[in-house]
Amino acid sequence: MDDKLVIAGHELSSRLFIGTGKFHSHKVIPQVIERSGAQVVTVALRRINLDYPEENMLNYIPKGCIIMPNTSGARNAEEAVRIARIARAACGSNWIKIEVINDNKYLLPDNYETIKATEILAKEGFIVLPYMSPDLIAARRLRDAGAAAVMPLGAPIGTNKGLKARELIKIMIDEIDLPVIVDAGLGRPSHAAEAMELGAAAVLVNTAIATADDPVAMAEAFALAVKGGRMAYLAGMGAVKEFAEASSPLTGFLR
Amino acid sequence: MSFYDVYLKYKGFDFNDFLSSVTDSQIMKILSKEKLNALDFLALLSDKAKEYLEPMAIKARQLTLKNFGRAILLYTPLYLSNYCVNQCAYCGFNCKNKIARKKLSLDEVRKEAQAIASTGLKHILILTGESRKHTPVSYIKDCVKVLRDYFSSISIEVYPLDTAEYAELIEAGVDGLTLYQETYDQEVYMEVHIKGPKRDYRYRLDAPERACIASMRSVNIGALLGLNDWHKDAFFTGLHASYLQDKYPDVEISVSLPRLRPHFGNFAPKFTVSDKDLVQIMLAIRLFLPRAGITISTRERPQLRDNLIGLGVTRLSAGSSTQVGGHAIEDKGDGQFDIADTRSVVQIRDMLYSKGFQPVFKDWQAI
Image (cartoon, rainbow over all chains, first blue to last red; front, side, top):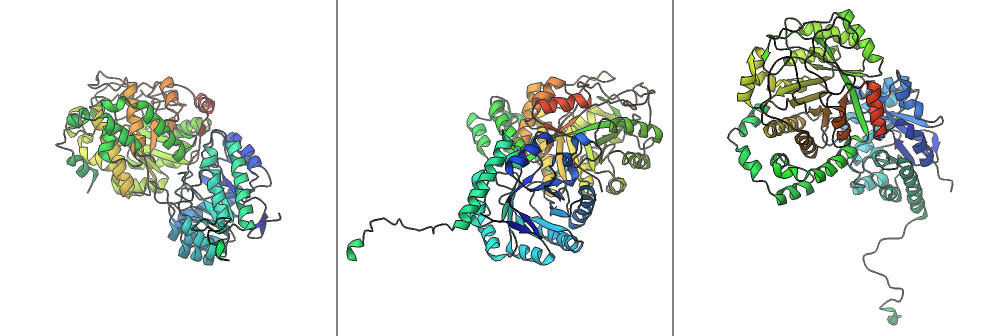
């Protein structure tokens, strides 16, 4: 199946993006990436420690992966823009995941500030992937601002609750002519499969893999689920019906 | 509205009556809830809840892993000065104590910074005794300028400041505040703070909020456990953190759980806080505030600290010294209290790895 995801001209065969926070050790990250087949890996600039090689996460990301720094820690557009510029210099990548969060209790993203940051950074040549609360209008504005994809949350970050925002994400998938990547809240491979069956272009998973007893095996489980979900989406799933349809219809005698 | 108004709401509340009337079914119900209210939290601090430490620990561990993963932030304190104008019954820096007083010069601050930075730590907490005369805001600011060459995150633990002063220090590169109320009980507070500006209970109580107003990135509060009945102080600590979290959602709120330690002087704590009590407090706070950071410092001994990993702790101090100049200066000042965990940064790092956790040396980059 030749099914590529294209983001800003980059062809990706893997539709599973990986986050690098919350792991028990950076050393496990290369194995997670390998077993997941992920080609896009997000890292928090605030965690990048260039002065201490052993603790520098960048040293654990295999060559060939697209590093997508994120603006974790930014509380408004201005901070996100500053972090993005430093991230480009530090990581040598012009991919940026905009994260603007000014609610430390639920960690919900601020769509308004995210749109402002996207507008500035897209003009500066960044490949901008904004993390957002699922909202069609905000997604349209992000598209108009130059986003290369949009990344709505499935459920609040780190909750592992699954596709709680399913209906809103489905509307975005149906209406927005941009890759929709479900980010945050996916706690099980079945959640990822569900997002892919819905038509999501990709999913980004961190907590569910990082905090699993065996993160490497969980990474592979997610990769398989993403592939399965995508294949099902492409295959075209049967319609959901309200009433059972017996193979010998009850009214068959009328024919 | 300030947290003082919340505190006053509980003025006539019969804590002992409430705590002694908590039932098994109440605790079971609380443990099945996703979101706890203030009285649920208080119930988890009761003796009855002590029978449920294991299920509390299981839930606290789940919440901690979910919200913070297997990562623990490491930092170390750097004492700039031990001059103090207060007479606090429980503190080694008490101005009446005949201890060797010292204030670091900027050159000495640089030496200390170099020694700490060589361990790989990027987060630092700078402390002073409470003396505006010896360590004015301008001095703290000068020290911050030196420290910015070495550290990506600088927090302060100094006397309470005005909002404008906090803003000035933030502008200079400070991103975190630690300030302990010591005890939330206003009467006990007046008893143990015998003389000095620290007797102003409300000025101290409102200081974390002033820091939030000034846009401090992270604010860490706590009570010095042992000064008062720990049930009440733990309750008000959690309530204070919750108040700040609700009112300033953009600020990272965390709590510390320091217990009184041996120090220069002869103050004997009226209230003991056992290891079991400390664990109960930490678990209750985690269940009440799933997103709050929790710090356990080197006041606690290694074995206890190691066992708390994964249950709720998100930050540990490492390679600590409470002496002024304790990291690299020969002519040191006396320390504030005795530390119990004297392990080096490398030893703490290895311990965390061995327990399946990642030591985080850098979690913020001031920009």
